[in-house]
Image (cartoon, rainbow, N blue to C red; front, side, top):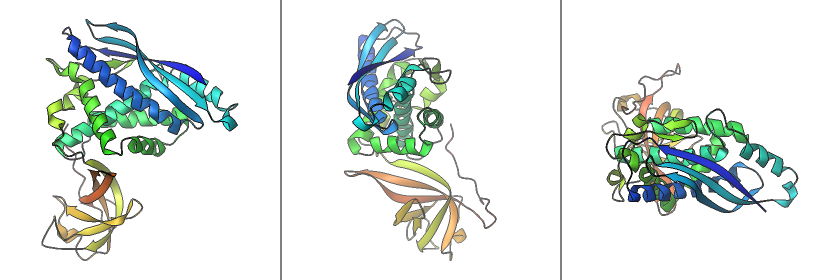
Length: 315
């Protein structure tokens, strides 16, 4: 069993002196996010077991809200991998990750933070959004894939699984929104992590707490381009009822289909299968996220090019 300490540097580039309550709330949010980040490690590093994790304060400068933290991990390894895993851990935990981050801890912390932020934006707008936090999430997933040897899809699956249950999904959204609150008082300010930052433009997109309170739904929106749909029910006169389909290779159960403008029902009518750009809407239930609806945003012709481009919400 060994203890590993991974530094995380966070600077809120705010002009005002934060209140004691802002500092406390920001630290509480950081602690919750770090706990989720640590929980992802065993799924990313074969043989690693995190027995305990804690986020500790090394130093704190209140005037600018500069947090020098470290994530303390008490870890063990599976015995059959004992000789092989430690060198991998030493490499992952001691080197600088790209030219932006000091350790993998910062990358994992940011992944959880922007994951929750992008979910918060979707919840507030009630649709999938091509937000700045979501684009940052994809960038970080690609970087983590290079560092761990996992594929980007593997990492997405690990992160999605962590926040599958209702309590976890609501927690990550709540803490991500709370983390950025000091930046949203007065002029919106960026937050720096090592040598990278979440920009003011990104933070402007993140809703304030009241916009994602518990009376809002926590739907998850996943976009697929060129998906193959088997149509099982059709109604030429309606766009929101009477339609059902199975998305091949994605979800093998029949789902309700909603035809979204500018797509016309005539493009689907009479066809057994189509290729389309779609959005799958999953509802948060007591058992976790369950797909409930397919939104068809573009239909592809037989030459493989879409008739309409999938719409994206404005930045």
